[in-house]
Length: 315
Image (cartoon, rainbow, N blue to C red; front, side, top):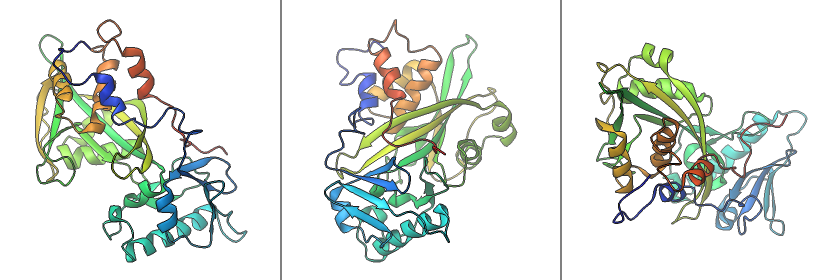
């Protein structure tokens, strides 16, 4: 998308600001340790050496410093992978919380995220997920209308100013982390009602799945690595349906034209991980094209990059 020369960013920078891990991270992961769930030969996470040293690993985890691997031993014949893995991760997290070993845990328990590509259902507490460097799942809904001229306008949420993370910044119409036992669609249905007071029947009958954005991030401060799988959904809404805050996480909803969304993203007014979602929507709706955006091919490539952990089971 063509922008003024005074703008400090380009659209591609809004993506690479989040998707900042090298494209070859899967083979160029030094100094991280790979996390394995034996007998699965695929890595499911990438862990900082400092985390490996500090984590109170149960005996079921095998640490190999020369190979830089953390491996959960195969489950005994009397136990399933689900029972074995969930108990092992929970024991480590419980001790880490009780001993207040990692600030990211806030010394409290949290809801569960699943390890996406595991061969069976394996879950880890949400706050602990970045410590293990696993892929996390989120779901975002872009609600929009068409005006009298057929132009798209997007319902953009403004985050409440009292929130700990990104207070007051602009956000997707609806978004949320996907709980371990939930599907992306179930997450969107629940969050649409809770966050935006959208009619459940409207969402159920008119929501359009639009695939998944994949990103890989190294946190600038903590250096923790994680992959992001963001499932995106579109919802064309009747003009007489206006989203309204349903909880204290959203301050207001604002209707914006596509050009204004781009302008505000480039000014840094959007929550960073929402920018790839908005850019993806604008590409799919034909607002951002190869004719008006010099980085169009790179944008498309980065929005669907290969992440270094599996997205589905191999058995």
